[in-house]
Amino acid sequence: MLTPTYMDYSATTPVDKRVAEKMAKYLTLEGDFGNAASRSHYYGWQAEKAVDKARSQVASLVGADPREIVWTSGATESDNLAIKGIANFYQKRGKHIITMKTEHKAVLDTCRQLEREGFEVTYLEPLSNGLLDINVFKDAIRKDTILASIMHVNNEIGVIQDIQSIGVICREHKIFFHVDAAQSVGKVSIDLASLPVDLMSFSAHKIYGPKGMGALYVSRKPRVRLEAQIHGGGHERGMRSGTLATHQIVGMGEAFAIAKTEMLEEGKKIKQLRDRLFEGFSDMEEVVINGDIEQRVPGNLNISFNYVEGESLMMAISDIAVSSGSACTSASLEPSYVLRALGLSDELAHSSIRFSIGRYTTEKDVDDAISLVREKVEKLRDLSPLWDMFKEGIDLSTVQWAAH
Amino acid sequence: MAYGKKVLDHYENPRNVGVLDKDANNVGTGMVGAPACGDVMRLQIQVNDKGVIEDAKFKTYGCGSAIASSSLLTEWVKGKTVDEASEIKNTEIVEELELPPVKIHCSVLAEDAIKAAINDLKSKAG
Image (tube, rainbow over all chains, first blue to last red; front, side):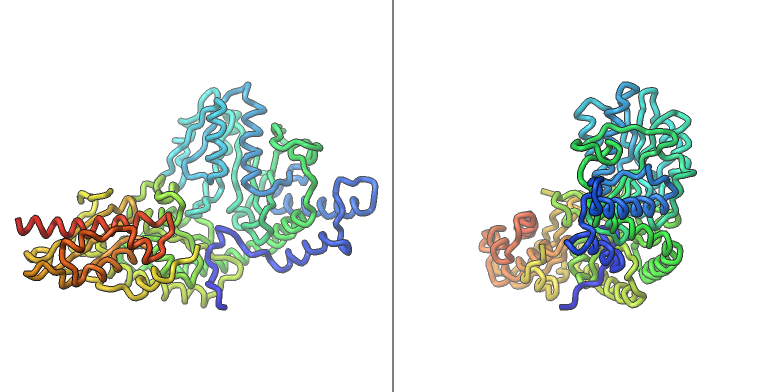
């Protein structure tokens, strides 16, 4: 069976074969299956060696000290640990947190939970290009603000926030700064030795590592302390208990090491392909790129084909695997909250498709995607009453809809 | 959650896509839904002097299930009288297309569309 061409790398990535091969060595009786915390025998020492190496590999990609890396089950857990961990530990200093409306649910839902526990959260609006206005951020800071959480790269629109500038302001006001880097690590250069960031969340499965594995960078200089969210044995300097999953950790380490070597070249190739994809649509009418084009990660193209609904387009182009900001593709009937936060009209939010390409995308994939999408957009516009109305010169914002 | 076969069929081979003259006296036009919901259907019926629907056309902005629901409806109403057409229930559409629970609202919208078209027709006669 011919499977669809994968263009949803922002959702997840296949594990790199080199990573899978390494991981397999840490599972069976023939491999190094020991518990890294078993200090008294060979099996534990072997596992511990592998974990230490992986810790260095991860630290190396991001300019951190290996002692600043805490293993978790993924970026979602890292976000929870960072935000709840700081909030609970430092709540005597203040109970106000700043974040953005466009953050991942792992941050937003965690903030909502803290609100239920008596914290106050300010959710900032982005500019229409998805970026945070630094003055808006400054204005939101209060005497009792203890934490800001701003993602490095947005998963839906791929825009890159200026975490250097935001971090400088946080330092000035003595606010802890957490950055969700799940979508940026291995794609955008990160140097925690110079970035004024206190905590950073990483995910393995967004860069060709296994799902169910991540890490949290916790700064030692200046020292950041956290209230642990998972207890039971005091692993990871008391910050995250639980037997270390050696094979998962090795996988993450290997994926990060590969990224360190290949990021620059790969980034160029992917950007070329992504730009080629965009070129393929740029002469079409009523096509909008969502999010800043320049401040954007190489592989992402989030695009709205006006007057064509997202899910119908995804069904039509089912030979390519992509995501849509359309409500129909979510369980609720609401369109993407990220696109709404950009100020997109409902039609454009419902009409969006996110293409995210990666390591295994070829030029042929891109060219095939272009012809398929063009053909189907035209077909769906022929089917669309909104397209007719647009062609007749009717301003849709003035229409009284008979919604039920 | 793969797409249903019948829904795909209507999408690949939509029946009766098009436009009728909305100003003609024997044409009823129903436009329901809203871009905010991601579903807008325009359904038109052309009636002969015996009150029988001789032609129907639709255009839909919406997901595959919405397109299929409105396409199916135009197939069903042809040859029916206006009264018979107003009896069509959304549940029949759900059954025929095997729509999952999350897509039932598409069939409701299609039922609204045919009723709106019939109302429009009646308002021209009266």
